Image 1 (cartoon, rainbow, N blue to C red):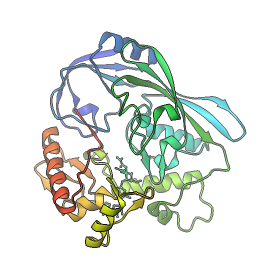
Image 2 (image 1 turned 30 degrees about the vertical axis):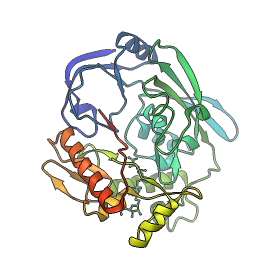
Image 3 (image 1 turned 90 degrees about the vertical axis):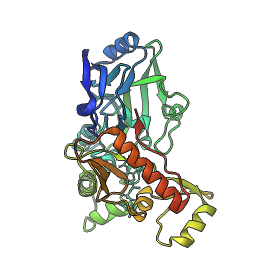
Length: 333
Ligand code: EPU
C-alpha cells in the first residue's frame, strides 16, 4: 500500500476542488484494503472520487481503493458471472463487456467512478440501473476486516440508494462485485427517448450500437471531468406524491414526469433548476453546466465551499418556486 501525507485532494476527485488530507492510503488488493482498515480505524473510503464534494480539509485518513481485475468466474449457455475488483474503473468494465459481447452494462457507459462505488449508490442511466445485472458482492467489515457476501436482496437497492448508504452506512468496504452478464441474443434497453433518437435508422441495434449511442449522448450533454470539474448530477430527481404533482402540473404544464407507482411520481431536478433560471449560471469559478442544469461545475480554482453555497442557493430557489426540496446526490465531505 502507498501512504502519502499532506495531500491536495484536488487530483483525487472529479470536482477538482482543493482541500488537504492529512493522510491518503492507496490500496491495490483486498489484503491491503483489510490491512489499511485495521491500521486506520477512523478512515474514510474513496473510489474514483467522482461522487464527492470536499468542502473542508480532511483530518481523518482517506483510504483510496485502487484494486484492479476483471475475471469470468463461471459461464453458462445464456450468461457469464464476472467478478470485478472494486478499484476497476466503471467505464473500463463496460467497455470490456461490450468488447466481449457480454450484455447488460452498455447503457451505463462513460459513468465516472469505480466499480466498488456502483452498488453503493446503485448507479443508473438511460433506463438501466446496475442492480438489473448485479449478482453479488464481497465487502470487508471496517471494524475487524472480516469478509461478508451480499446478494442483491441483501443490498436493498433503490433509486441511487442501497443498504450501504442507509442502515449499513460506513460499516463495510466493498472489495469485489460480481455481475451476471448476458450472452447473445441480448435484451437491449433502447426505450429512453435520447437513446431511441440516436438509434433511429438502426433496424437491429447491437450492443455496441447502444454503447456508442450512450457515449455520444453523454459526450454531448455532460462535461468531461478532465476538462471541467464536476460530479455528474448534483441532486437526486425528487419523488413526489401524485396530488402534489397534479397541482404543480396545473401551474407548469410542460413539467416532464415518470410515474413510479400509483402514488408517486419522479420529476427531473434538471427541469426544475433550468426553469428557475439557473442553467449556465456562473459565480466566480463555479456554476451550473450550460447543457445540463443538474450538473454543478468547477471551472477551475473553485472551492468546495463555493460549490456548496451555490447548491444551497439553488435549493432555496427551487423550493420557493416549486415547493420541492432537492436532496444532494453527491456525498459531502
Ligand atoms: N432537462 C431540462 N434542462 C436541462 C436538462 C434536462 O429541462 O438542463 C429535462 C430534459 O428535457 C428531460 C429531463 O430534464 O425531460 C431529464 O433529463 P435527462 O434525460 O438529461 O436526465 P436527468 O434526469 O437530468 C438522470 C440521471 C443521470 C443520468 C440521466 C440519463 C439522476 C439524478 N440523474 O439525469 O445520472 O445520466 O438521467 O439516464 O438520476 C448521475 O447520477 O450523476 C447522472 C448523470
